Image (cartoon, rainbow, N blue to C red; front, side, top):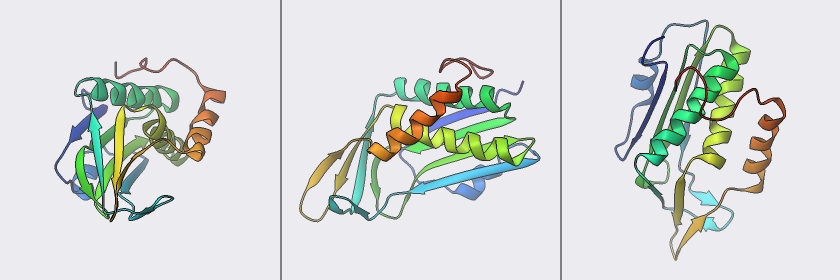
Length: 163
């Protein structure tokens, strides 16, 4: 098994999604997702998002998520890059890339990883608007999306081929 099968990275610097995709191994199906900071939330306009985390703990959590996805869908690779610090509206905040033999596995795994990141990863988010700043909690819709994966769960988080 390649040491790069599950790769996670937490950084402040901006990233280029195309360069990250080039790091993925050749596969029958490659699915990537790039998430950007939205300029509008339910609370109003957003100029920037401040993400805080605990170094070490965050990387272990992301590694467990990537490993679980790899085990569930027999992925060739699962890579996660998540930014921290102040990120302006419109800038990329997260990138996920997965490789599998078939598209169904790749799409499902990418969606699972994003749902897990939104609800299980230890990030604390603060939206900065024109007039104020406010801490952000996981939305009910994010929690509902993540709960559906529990119905077909095959193993505990933190187990799998990348541990």
